Length: 151
Image (cartoon, rainbow, N blue to C red; front, side, top):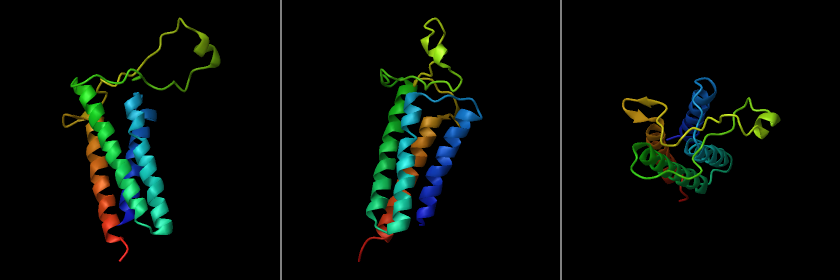
């Protein structure tokens, strides 16, 4: 396995998330945003591995993606109503808000709830797909780590 597969996989998932957000108009909830950070960490750890060739960076990428799998699993459970979401589960600020809009307390605010499934494919939500992809990428990083361990 090549570290490039792990880096490219996380980059593709981030690109898809931003594409759904900025091209598809699907604003993320707070858990959706949280699911992006492990991919950012995995990309950075992967680049550090490419530069320094130390397997600890592979392990760090793997652990980050396993955490991402956990976040995605939690999010999927919230979507299914298996447990309550976070109290702070709301969408991000709109790019079109002005300073005056922030001070207008009569304006309606569209909040994206973590319990809403805004997109699904084959009956699985985006959170579930991200969790599965994160798990596969974690296994890829584990394989890269094992193949590059010191003798």
